[in-house]
Image 1 (cartoon, rainbow over the protein chains, first blue to last red):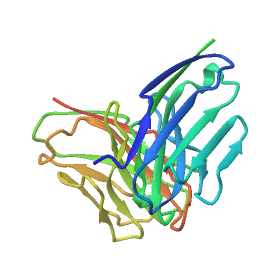
Image 2 (image 1 turned 30 degrees about the vertical axis):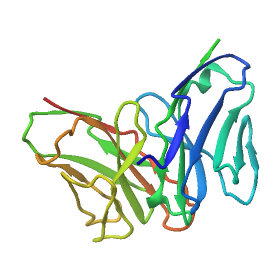
Image 3 (image 1 turned 90 degrees about the vertical axis):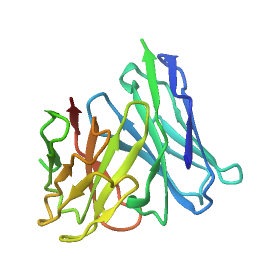
Image 4 (image 1 turned 180 degrees about the vertical axis):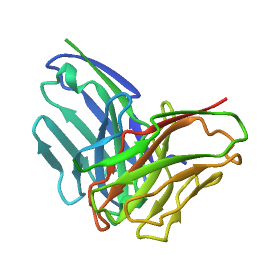
Length: 113
Length: 113
């Protein structure tokens, strides 16, 4: 049973475009929603995270939008660059506990020059 | 520099052999984790440890074993009982508590032939 559904599986955009990656969840007990960025052959790194008491959070060119009623959250990358090409994972947990993180299956983003 | 060191980066083993993956961290983190990553899949939790000499099973612990004799070290043994051991293994650590960032190592590729 997949608790966090991530889409699309892959995404190709041109430089300067705004890729959007979506995640949906069913467990209403989830209260911490991080996004991780992973480059080939490397471990994931925390990009940005949000809690359900806010609807949007921005850090640089990365924005998380959160829709609690729809149980969905998404990552937007403004002015995307070729260096943003990576795999992005959404995740969710209850009680903010890291050991209860459930990951989506990932989105492979390619930003063409 | 502070961080998480995993070794070896690449490992080949014959079917039926046990193999141990090393994970060391110098971040003074209490919690450590092992995840498995398969192509096109998200990260799945194998084991985690909150303190020395204590560890808990994650979602896919069958066929794996761990130890936590030192705060800095959390080795993972992939036993012959693991039916599909070929994968990318990620070690991680965090301060224990709500919403603390998980830091990942660079991973170990295990191929069983």
